Structures are given as C-alpha cells and as structure tokens.
Length: 332
Length: 160
Image (tube, rainbow over all chains, first blue to last red; front, side, top):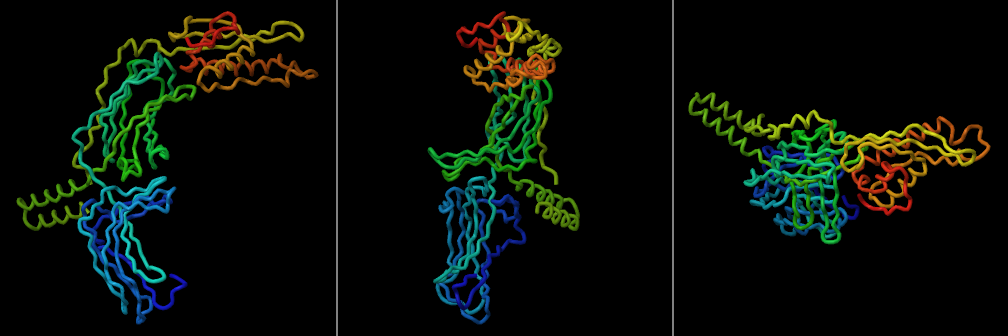
C-alpha cells in the first residue's frame, strides 16, 4: 500500500484452475523453513484466473495495463541484482484504461517448458513463479505466486557398478564396490568394502553423503560442501580378507537430483565419501561421485487404475465402481 | 501404499575369507613401551633416560624387536626432524618443565617421581601416535630413534 497514491487501490491475486486436484510438494525456503507449493512438470499447462478486487467500491482505478507473467529464473545470492531468466512468458490481460468494478481475468500458458528442477540452496536459488501486475504511473500493484517444478527421469539404460582398488602403499589396500553409479532418490546403495591389506589400526569406518553446490564460472568458481549423512558401516578392526557390506537407504535423506551446469550458472552434485578412522583419529578417505535422479510416481498411478478397470470385466459393476474410485483415491 | 517393485538389497558377492587370514596374527601389530626411568650423572649434570622398547610385525621396520635408551631431548630432536621433513601434524610432547629446573624449589624439580611418571606417560603416547603414522614410518629419523643404539645428530635426513 503506497503512501503516495491517492484515490483507488486494488488487491490482486492468482488462482489456478486445478487448485483442487493438483498435488503440492514441500520445498525449503531461503531461511530454512518448509512450505508447500503446487507441483508442476515440464510441458504442463499453467492456467488460472487473476482476480482484481477494488479496495474502495465505486471509485475508478486508472491503470497502464494488466498482465500476467510466467517466469523461471536463477538468482545467485552474491549477485542479487541480476536475475537470470531462462523462461519468460507474458500474457496481456487488459489494455491501459480504467476499471470501475472488481474483475476476473482468465489466463493460460500452454504446455510451458520447465527444463530445470526448482532448487533453493546455500548460494543460489532457481524458482518458477507467476506474477500478475497492474501497471500504474507511480507504482505498480503486483502479486507473485511460486510453484515448484520437479524433473523426472526413468531408469537409465546404462548403470554400471563402481568398483575400485585404492590404498596407501604397504599400509592399507581396499577394494570398494557400489552396485550402481546412478541412484534414484528413494533407492538403496548396496555395496561392499573388501580389505586386501591392513597394516594400520582401524577403529571404525563410515560412509558419508556429501552435497557439493558449485556456483560461478572460470576463476570465480565457489564450492559449498555439505555433509548430508554420516552412516557408520563398521566398528572395530578388520583384517585381511574381510568383507564389510553396505546397505544405505536414500529415502531417509533430503536430497535433490544431480544438477549439472544448469543454464551455465550452477551445479549440484553428490558424492559418497568412504572414511576409515584409525586409533589415533587419523582419517583415510576415498570420494566417489554418484548421480541422483528423480523417479516419477506416474507408473504406480496408472497401474492401480488399470487394475481397477481390469476388475470391471470380472465383477459386478458396483464392485468395479468402488475399485475405480478407490484407485483414484490411492493415486491422489 | 506399497511400491510396485521392492529394491534388491541383497549383499554383493564377496570372496570367502581365508582361515589363516581370519585367525592369524593381524598385520598391524605395533607396540612401543616407554618405561624404566633412570637418572644418570651427578649434581647439575643429572638427566633422566627412559627405555623405549618396540615390538612389531610391520615390514617397514628392519628389526621386529628393539630396545634403546632415550632422554627427553632425544624426543625433542625427533619432533623437530619430523616437523621439518614430513608433512604430518606432529602431536605435542609433554611439557619442557622449565620452571621445575629453577633453583630454590621445595621438591626434587625434574627428578620428582610423580613428574617423571607424568612425563613417561606423555612420551609413550607421543611415540605410539607417531610410529603408527604411515607418513612418519617413511622417515629415517624415526627408524634411527627407535632402532639404533645412539642418535647420530649429523645424519643425512631422508626417506626410508
């Protein structure tokens, strides 16, 4: 509410057409809190209504145009002034003129490309939002509505295991193996550590998941490392020939898919760090990158829906109707 | 709400362990004891030596058993050599106790039994921490300290 405007003012808000049925996803805000936002995927249409409500009924509202924008942008925290917009769509809702009463405008952004996943990190933020604006001579009235975008992948064709022999000459030789190199966010890391030579006194061994957020280019590259998880896999001293199993369930940790060189602005990569600690608290470690991807729930939904349709053929229509509505409930 | 497929979490195949490896002596046996403090000399030229006995099966040490006598300044020499030549962070030695060497003390100063015992424990911790470090094991000064009768301060520093 501006102190410099006299006369009429208005409230503007944006409502999606499918607000009742669309799923919401939790997403961290910059100050660490978690909020729920409408969830969209690449290619989905974004449509809804913009409601303009005049504050003082009867009085006219003069404006220089009303529009709605769909924006996808990357914001680097150390360079707040510059927003890098990689998606920018606009729909004009009203030409310059005046409004004498509250009004609602329809809008539709058809099959919008949303190439990257929403991300809020330590030094960078990628977000998508709708912004409705009433342009005026002195000050605009605008409202933003954030949405969350997830990027989905399917099982990769090539997913080789990671197997390597590493060590310190004549002191410690191990062979580690992880069953895959690409894991989805609810996957399980199955692996093993085989001890070929142990001439140091090991006290315990753990596996850490490290997230590395890289921002900037050229000489100004900055890496922010964050240890997401520490998981002890062995307590006590191993000897030659022993094999230690690893079974690490990823669903318990808050992670995003691997993001490589997004719009040439930032990357988010994940590493498994195998750490051995000896009796004198000396640490020996080996880091290995893994690729994380997001699996869609869509398959499950169609399966139960198809199962419900199949049951329709064999049972009475009443049962089938119940099965169909149950399937719809399960998948929502 | 169950997943259509359950993740395969079975262990990966591992070679069965050889019984001699499983029940044999571990390859990381390294024990160093610092004990039997003896005060030698008279009057103002007295000093305390400690016996440093080492038992090991690590191949990098030429002798599997050794026994030498060392004094506090020998430990200081080893610390300085390692700080200069190796890339490791050398753990601290027990204190130099200069105050105890001043005259007009009520007690025996640096020859007080409790002080010698405290120092012995500190030296034992120090030498065990260093000898177990893979990078320190490469240094000639460590091998000379542990396994040779006397320390040749004019030696040529280097790697083993």
